[in-house]
Length: 395
Image 1 (cartoon, rainbow, N blue to C red):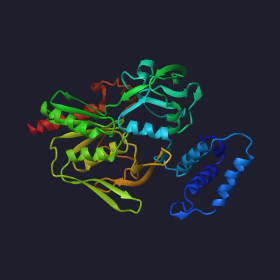
Image 2 (cartoon, helix red, strand yellow; image 1 turned 45 degrees about the horizontal axis):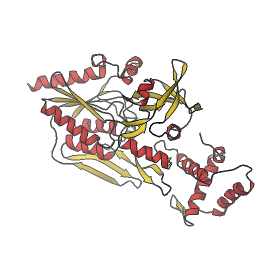
Image 3 (cartoon, rainbow, N blue to C red; image 1 turned 60 degrees about the vertical axis):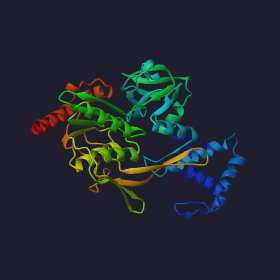
């Protein structure tokens, strides 16, 4: 939902955006075509300046116009970020940010934010926010129907400040006061399972994930691991460099990332001839997307690991984050990627694991809350069963 004068029309928003660009450079280009009719844009701004009865903030008009221009591309992966939003984006990409400490997704029914993860010792944790709560308001202001960047802006606070977060829980509205603090998201956790099976969970592929993953695997090998479960369920992807670092560590020499630019030219990343020859199974689910589903698909195509779980989301577009002179940035799709077999995970509707095991809604809810015991996790128990058979055949 857009605000101010540009909310009345996407066309008006686009015109204002083009006006801004034309002010920066008389020969500004959009999509390679010289922008014509600049006098029309100046005329529009002059009408606002000379005829509009209220007050207005030109910086806010420009900010909203730029946001609407990117939104008009109708690409769910592209968005404009204000300077404040860009700072938040960089912090999150570094797995360290100031916030309330929740992982969220847009809830289709309410258009609020459904919580699917709460970080321990965070402000949300201490305030009593739990998995499956739906955030619907911040300090009494309704946030349903807004885009994720808009909601993030509404949620911005300084460290040590608080916000009254209204959540919908079991058809009841509850207001919780949440303290903002530094939240560190550890992208990797690991442990040794019975039978010398190493378990590594990858929560994202943001900064540090590659080094942390390799350290975890090497630690487990030193402890005697002879097989691995790599869990990328609920992993929403991250940086290409982190994904390829991990694939290079695991896989033999070959293609590990095929990027295709807007002109159709392939740019291929290769792994070296050093690799980890240890059996593995990858767990995926409906909330595995981008780097996570690509990771699973590549290990399967190399016949390196079996895959278990649910059909993934289906994303094959790459985004580039381009800083702008106003301190903000545009996160925009600049290419797409393919698997080693030149498969687009978008065209296939996501990655289909070799062993499809769907969670029931009750199992999914427990899994999201971190309350699903491994013995009751059908995806996990299938992975263990597969590895136990492999280990038996090795002996």
